[in-house]
Length: 442
Ligand code: ADP
Ligand code: MG
Image 1 (cartoon, rainbow, N blue to C red):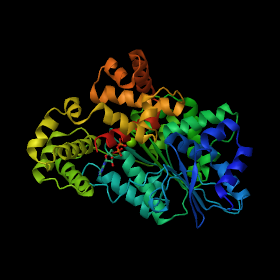
Image 2: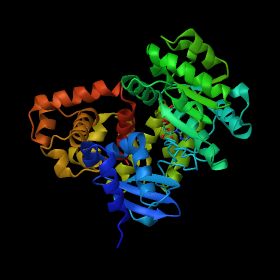
Image 3: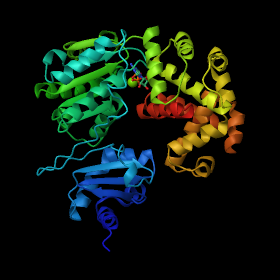
């Protein structure tokens, strides 16, 4: 029988350098090919990211050469069968007679308006976003600049706009990226001595860029972003930006870029008040299907005032704790958790083994691999993340971590420092670690 995937692989083998082929294609499989929708299973996030970012064109061509004209190509991690694929959408390649390749939207479908709780802290930002949905193209809201502290819902909100716009008008070209991705793509462009970088984004309908504060001091990127912005703006594209502070407070921002940022609407998100914190906790626990008594909700809302991410973390931690003890969430169990808010309680709840296992699972590698001696990049990275988490979540000493991995503890110091250093520049790593943290306490 004609094996489409084998045949696509042979085609790819001829068009992609051997080393890349071995790493990025060889271990994948075809999970679905139906109604123009191709789903490819990949072993880990590293491969997925590279396929989305770099190699999707080769794939599209290879399918075409084999007589398939995909409407959509999606990547999932793991080896899922058809019925599990519903929520797997991560990337879309739209094919028209001119072969328009639609890049990954970058949106996480989890971020919705329907699960975003509106309170006095974010109602202005929320209604500005709704306004864009209803009056797409209103230049008064272009760009929309949402700012506020860490963990207050900026990413959630700006991605919800993207998701809703796409739901309403599936043909819109929407892209969500972090400023780091923008920067990295730009540097890559320069390295290859290509020109016309701003063309890359000019045909989008909606460009959403997160964490704009990190463009501070990067002059070349700012210049390029300025051109991108203008090109998109003149074409009537909607631009939505976020940052941890108002544009006027971002140091090292050129004046002309600051002016652009401020020409639309800038709105902040604040820490939610007590009532909103309760509403968020109620919503999250009912979504998780856990019955949490009102007094517990209030206790949490009263004690955690830093940000919503922490609030979610505490809720998850409490649920995990109660599950372990086989009790229902109640105020007595809660007090020790929240009163030693920090690592001590985590230590009671979590063993190093669980963190290592969850990290391995997150990166789709095995426990043997993460603890073993293999030094290939896609194993070493997760291993270093696990070491970092043991240090930061459980406060373990370096020698203790070293013993978990049967390694010299100087290796552990190196790994932990490396991750710490990378976290300030590598946004996808930051996202991975915050997702992992969430999973660890679920
Ligand atoms: P930021 O980008 O501002 O750092 P995020 O958007 O990542 O914050 O939000 C942190 C976490 O809190 C996410 O899991 C998000 O879904 C949740 N969250 C934030 N604001 C709300 C809200 N108003 N309603 C429900 N969940 C929220
Ligand atoms: Mg964010």
